[in-house]
Image (tube, rainbow, N blue to C red; front, top):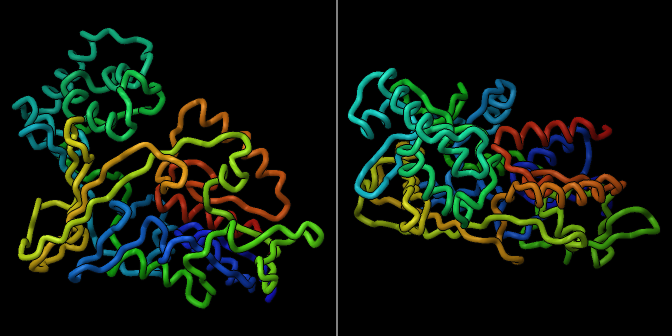
Length: 378
């Protein structure tokens, strides 16, 4: 069988690309090393609840075209992301807004909040932040930093804030309104029935092979400038690779750094409501997890049971699942070496957060996949 494209990865990027190439009349085969489609946005049903197996994914965008695109695939509810933060015995609203400041300082007006923050910043006298801690302090002052930024960030990155570069935090949005809506985007929500069903819609009519690793499935046919399956049965004119770019090149320039996550999911039978909110962050470093997700609240569930997941960040080791890149100067320089190697590949495209070593929101993943597909010949 001759295919136009082998799409490596049945996540959002790969699924969108495959769908668009199918529209162009191209024959695609999609493979994934996992036993399911949808990549990290995969949802599975437990007791009638759509559980986000790999962490919370809330769709949001300011791009009307992208919003229209996903609404062709699924019906979205009107979920608005309004997380909470727990620090010791205190509970705060996120993002940082007047509800946060009223609780923290027992104040009521935007002027009082702004004056409190500015006075703390002024006392510190930081003009050129040398690390992430100084950068955050120069943006929001001591109270917000100590209670809501420091511990969470150190857990997320696995190191002291004074050891992290300042550019990781470009800004910390402070809102002087009583608005708990985390995203400013006008379009947001959760697909009813979960992301797996939405991804399945993208992949309708496209051949998908699960539990199939790229390196075990195909080999390079130098003579014919194609990829061929190891059994010689199928050939592919081009490859879209959405895995780790350094793994594709056998780490020839060295391994890029990633952060990984462990998920502890628990079914609480007979407990209708565990925490009253979909996402609650735990900002003390002493608490080993960064947040608890209660999945039913993404779809306003009223089931008699509930499912929660605790997220534990940790260092990535080769063989682990990589979740997000470590965007510091050293890794940026290393990625550029791999990007140069990728540019020399005649019939291999690289896409997604791992293939392009960058953090992507879901709407940006879709936009990038659409752009790549549009650039491919009909």
